[in-house]
Image (tube, rainbow, N blue to C red; front, side, top):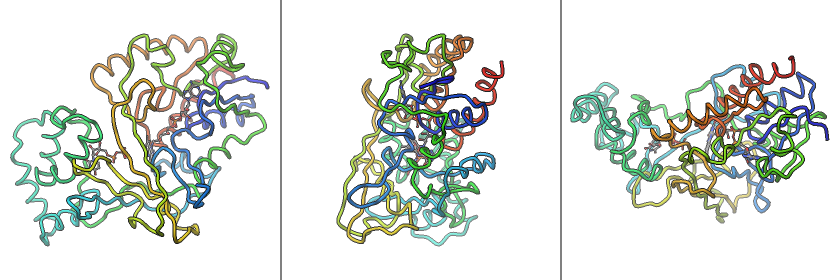
Length: 385
Ligand code: FAD
Ligand code: UDP
């Protein structure tokens, strides 16, 4: 197996770099993936019992305003016409999200027009005077206390396992509130789910005569033929694993949130009527419930079985999957020192990327855009030189 370039990780970042390098530069790429499947956290597969496409690591909806990323993605998969809508179950009643005129009128048992609703929220928000110092104050300054307590406080506390008065106001800077009845979750012009699922999409990207994939191999374990020791100083590497793990946590571990997923098959044709229902109340232990059949309205599904997934959030321990960077001030300081160590390795042709490698929350479209840029700015130059 020839390797001119080793890509660590087969998520959308690694897959994009590998695909571009094999096609445009004509180099032989080996993709080393620790898990037993391609696709990283976006991965989905058809459940054997029901035929329903299950998103193994939680719901993934592709949406973008980036024409170039949309055109690139469409080379490897078509997308269906799914449009994301999310509802909230608060105190046993279902409300539309993001908070919009429908949510406001239902919550206050009113029939307000946009200006009246705006005035009402402004009156509620007036209790915060001066610059909001934390997430709670920031949210109240945007939507007022009643809506904050119903839809934000419990959900945020469950997600971050931290009281909202101790969280950074920046987390919620752009809490969308719509003074109309539009409850589309995303406002990008392009949106959909890959018709064959995310696993098939990434398989298609890596289906190239000059790309070889090695599943179930940890690059950092050191003993594989394409592991860190074998590559050192010999083969250029694009690394999309966790940056702190690469350096053996020598400056300390970065903080992540992890998720626990509880997946069940239920014997009904439709459990909740929508793909995602959020549970903002503190008494309910999970944050949301996914029902995957709704992502593929174009497919035939059984009418007596459905797959649901409850999502629970907590701080990650050393053996947990990292999902969301927490980004405390200590994390940011540590990250900048890890970034210095990473920059020193560029001369040895090792570059870090993706959500784990850059310790950034990136949506799929931004991941692809960042990978195209990494390819053009860094990887291409390695081989042109
Ligand atoms: P990943 O997908 O994490 O891929 C990294 C890969 O590297 C993994 O497969 C890992 O196994 C492998 N790896 C790590 N270390 C090693 C090693 N040492 N050796 C070998 N392999 C290694 N984005 C959206 O656009 N829309 C959504 O609706 C959406 N929903 C999301 C929901 C959740 C719960 C989460 C967590 C994320 C969501 N995202 C969503 C973001 C999306 O998952 C990311 O944009 C995308 O997965 C990032 O791709 P990546 O390649 O950077 O990382
Ligand atoms: N949020 C909330 N209630 C909801 C949904 C979101 O309070 O019903 C807040 C919460 O603070 C969360 C942030 O908005 O951390 C981002 O939520 P989103 O659902 O976008 O997170 P993701 O889909 O990335 O998990």
